[in-house]
Image 1 (tube, one colour):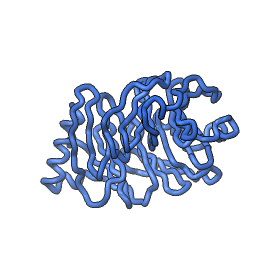
Image 2 (cartoon, one colour):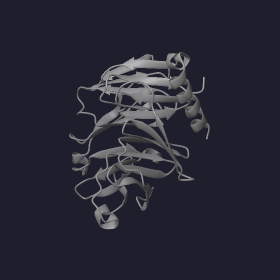
Image 3 (cartoon, rainbow, N blue to C red):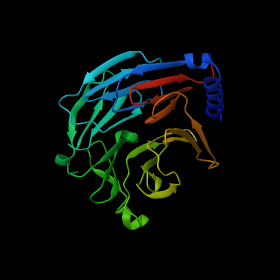
Image 4 (cartoon, helix red, strand yellow):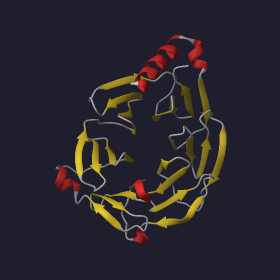
Amino acid sequence: MRNLLLLLILFRSLLGSAQGVDSVRTIPGNFDLFTTDELGNVYALKGDELKLFNPEGKSWLRNSLKTFGRITHIDVFQSLKPLVFAAEQGQLAMLDNTLAVQGSVINLPREGYPQVDLACASVQNYFWFFDPRELQLIRVNSKLSTVNASGRLDQLLGFTPRPVQMQELDNWLYMNDPAHGILVFDLFATYYKTIPITGATGFEVRGNDLWYVKDSVLHRYDRLTFASEHFPLPGVGTVRDARIERGRVYILREDRIEIVQLGR
């Protein structure tokens, strides 16, 4: 409820006064993708260069991951410890708080996982993988041994899932299949339900709220009441992704990232 109230205040101020517009901080750049952590830090990727910005949008660190494959996903399950994943090369790495690779880069095909196109972090230093060939969700431990697997999801669900994003929160795994909705699994990789949200280009789960972007509009879905709200975002340009952290909304556009303070 607090986030919802802050958003209402934000949109009224941005649409109705110049003072609201002044609250927008901009990180210029044609970024390929971005994410945030629970502290409000921003991780922005362009090519093989990953940049870290503080919640005020000031550049903090950068690292060029030239020996890594093309990064297709960044997951900051733990603040200042991002996971980066290159689907085409099957490479996975954990970074430290200086954006340097922690340990060594993991080559998934060599570890027995030749077909993984999605990966994210899990509790206990575990990982989630989605295997598009076997059409199953896999949870592995820190030694990359499989501990849980869903089995073939096409047989379970009655359709062929084509997920584009995964996130774990509070012992649940959320997997976005834009054509069918957001699939929810427990830590045993057991299917629980499908949240009827289709067409989402990006999503984030925080507390009881599931925030997602669809057609350049930010939506909020309450996981307890099943109520939905939508918020057309102010500003010019296509909204590629958006996230909410610590009273701020972060908006990824074609040529910049905007950070808007809520409720000031």
